[in-house]
Image 1 (spheres, rainbow, N blue to C red):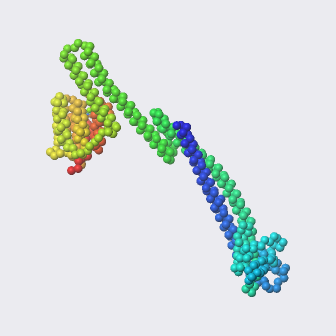
Image 2: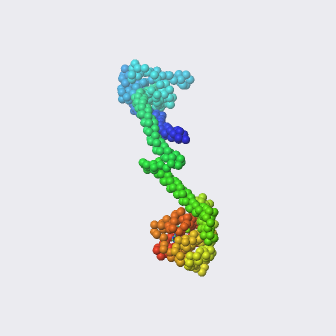
Image 3: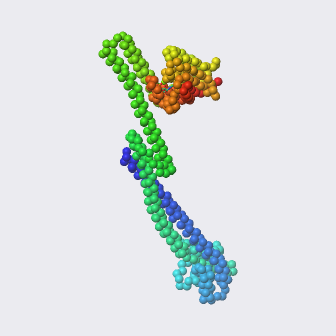
Length: 472
Ligand SMILES: Nc1ncnc2c1ncn2[C@@H]1O[C@H](COP(=O)(O)OP(=O)(O)O)[C@@H](O)[C@H]1O
Ligand SMILES: [Mg+2]
């Protein structure tokens, strides 16, 4: 697992480094294979245009003397002068036509500005100039050439070739190319190294979170991972810390729950065991035995209630409590549950008033669950108060909600307890009870999209269940 993770991260590291490398490579390839050739073409084109322009400008000087009477040295001088003005090599060619209709064309050199130099007659462009009777050009690779036909009495019997070497352009381009290559190599190195370092830093942070997750998965909680930046990984770290905190809370709650539940189970079972032993070993009189049986009955009752409550809670936790919301008349539920409590009310010498409106108070809820909450509240109001207390149950519609209130005139719940009575297993007094009733009531209320709240002062304690009202 660990090795696999390592390799995966390694591959992330390699991937990022390679990505940096590839991006740089593409950038420099574009420069090398597209930008540099375009630059070369541009420069060559410019040179060609220059040659064409000067050829146009200066060839008339040559044309003027052609066909006339001019000595060879003077002609050479004129050619050289023209070459100087044009800043190009100028070659004067004579045209010899032969064959049918003079189609076959040959050239012979009359004069060249660089007497003695190698003269390579660029035939194709000269032929084009003569046959089209207009200026023709030829570009590269070694030079830019413009050929101008020179006319005498309407016939082009000569061609002036202007050529300018492209050496300078080639040199400049080669230099640029070499520099691009060098810069590219350096950039690639930096990209590879930079990519590797950045990726390593990232991978290290990811690995830290991974290690944390592994620890949590193995059941060991760790200190929060320090959040050292606000980027996505920082956010991830934060989320991870939150998740761990949440898990820790859940874990603690689970442990507490198990500890509490087993404690609640153990107490009545031990006491039951004690009574069973007494019954077997002691030779008690009838009255005492009856007393013991009564104690045992209470113990069994407590265990039964606890078992039911625990089952309810586990169903709530598992999300398997089905809520069938339908119109429920709270008044009817109150009357029915209150009648179940008649013996308890009598036992406690309590007073129970039902304050119900004439009509129905319809809530959208699950009847059985509302009755269960009502039982929990009424049971509390009778058991956690002194004898002779007055309990009032009210049902009414308010602000589009249906409300059920159970109020008693008991001594109330101290403030610090009031905040916690809805917690599981929380009990605020010495009256025996598991402390699960209100926790269950609250969860049920919330499942029905309602809520339950407590207001208490030294003369009255009121629990209010608010539920969505049914459509009228
Ligand atoms: N009407 C009440 N008057 C005074 N204290 C109450 C009342 N209802 C609940 N309590 C307090 O809230 C605690 C939690 O109630 P509950 O969750 O029903 O647990 P249990 O009844 O098993 O103790 C009780 O132990 C009690 O101290
Ligand atoms: Mg209770």
